[in-house]
Image (cartoon, rainbow, N blue to C red; front, side, top):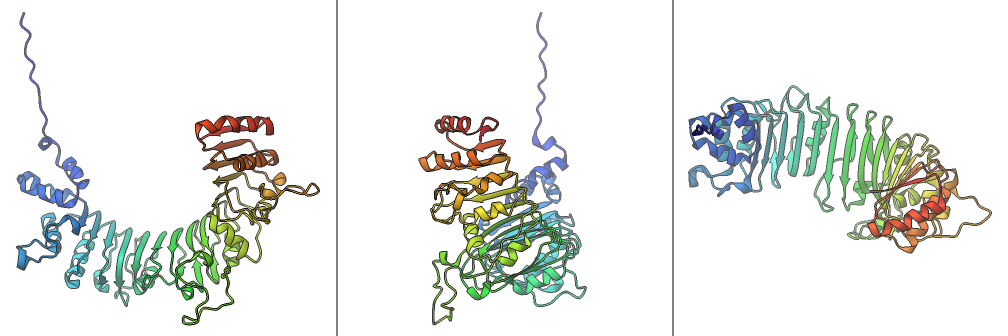
Length: 456
């Protein structure tokens, strides 16, 4: 009996619903997505369904040519034509990245065209100067704004006074936008997150080292200016801030309001580690009395005393020791995490642990550090006197996490010191190579019978 042949049904991409095809095109580079419009009438109608647009000048052939010289091959021509193909369709996310000089008038009209389509996100990146007219920079829908690598200027607020009434996230990466910075903070009443990255030590301008706003809940700051005067004062007037990530050279003074802070991540650096400028220079007028420990972080450290989680870099440990006149009580601190470096010391740790009576989790990234006489009884750098009790004995730490354990004799002794003196210890987690695990298991069994060990 002959078997009936079965009809095999094939499904082409053209048979998919237009909404699905639009979502697929949204994941493609915008240049590639736009090029599909030449395939057929169906694909030409799909482009308005693409809500995420990402334009990169480096992906456009002859980006610097204008329509007069290349028949429309210029970068802005390509962007304008794509927006025309979109018709009146809305845009959710718009990214524009370019390197060459472009006409400011066309640029401002382009930004207005995009903002009138009700986007949620706008990301602009350019190393060239850009002057943004106030009447062109306004959106009732924008939630996230990113400005990167360039100079953005705006000398006045628009007539209605508020630029982005719905903006929640503002990110400024390596930009010079002093006027616009003030304007944005004043005119974004719902701003919740502010990110500032100024990593170029020779940058010609930057933010004003002053952050304010009752609605800001999270902020990340990375600042590396070589100018001592630029570090005279850092002000944070953010009473609702719950998360702070701050990386910079220590400033001369701080004016901070951090009443609601829950988690802080600090990377404060002593000026003696700045190899780009001398601390004593008659030509620039640097004060020879400032010394290696110039700066005062006392007010900043006092302002974070109520945090629950604290992360400190190896440099921050030294700033806490050399640039803090008095250490506050960290009564709410439950988790302390710090990094080690072979050229940075642990001198502040004994005092910091004593000031953290409710500490439960201690996370250490590397055990090797600079040997000094000031580390006291928190490590094995200096033998503890028999008539002096170890500060670790009073710690309530239940969980100890160690990353970067290398298995050296010094590291093994340090682990033994922790296990023998942290009396409340219940769990030890160590990231270590497999061949180093047996020695830690033996050490744990010898030091404590109730503590467990896990390898991560």
